Image (cartoon, rainbow, N blue to C red; front, top):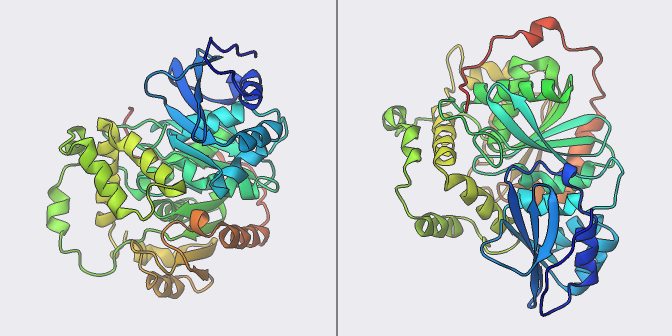
Length: 415
């Protein structure tokens, strides 16, 4: 599909023109009628790829773009010659991406000349909680990767790039986050997420998966393994969020707090953004910077704020003991489990490793010198460990049974 630039005082670089000429609209699930992706030369000029109803034109920069991609001329040439260099350049800091990661990565995927299975693919999948935004790459045994609280599917881009040669990699925006629907009346607890993701597997035509979850995503994976053991071949937990074992002094207050207050933006954007950048080290560069962008673009919408507050509230309310308590049920988990902990993690204490080992004597544990997001901070070690986990658990045979198709629906509401 050809893209003709509008008149500009400076000629469009050949590499950027090449990418625009290769644009294929069917690769990306664009939700807006017009999407503007700014393509910039480091310290120099920039051009906007304006995508209107699937048609792309190059134009001078105008207004606020949806996504911004910046690189020097040599990097742009290498990306145009081999799109796989885009992720390498991004990981190495030679290509930066800001604002909407879905739109930025989607542009690179849609301008790739690669037609092989390792190519990134985007789509939306219907579930009872609404439509979920999914990114896939590769073929082979399926792997489902699920992000943490406030993050998006983009946090698993390094994992897709590392493992797509051997696996069908799937990562998803949880309901309430990223580009997925955000139902206002959903419970946003572990059971809700677990049932929604089993809906997703049905929609993908997948019987069972290797599961990888970071933070909240790890807690959801354990819930799927407990509720639907036939759907998971193995579970990789990256700094998983787990039920508190000790007293929760704020429990009475949190129980009466209403997440619907998130429909009101009580703090200005500048306050929220400033707080995020103080909480996250190096939040102006690399993965940390785009992580803040991804959080803000959902949080600064009423339904996104309500979903964030509801999910955070449920993490605190997760019952540890009793008949339905997390730690009471955990020893019944059948799946092979690998836990990867960050020695510098300030959100999930590494002391949880001992408690998981006591509940699951068959689980394996790896401690890395990193914080809360091992797949981003220590990608080589994390992905090598996950690959070994998956190799120990070959595909299970059999089809989805009728009883699983007619399981009791979770308490969800339409968006």
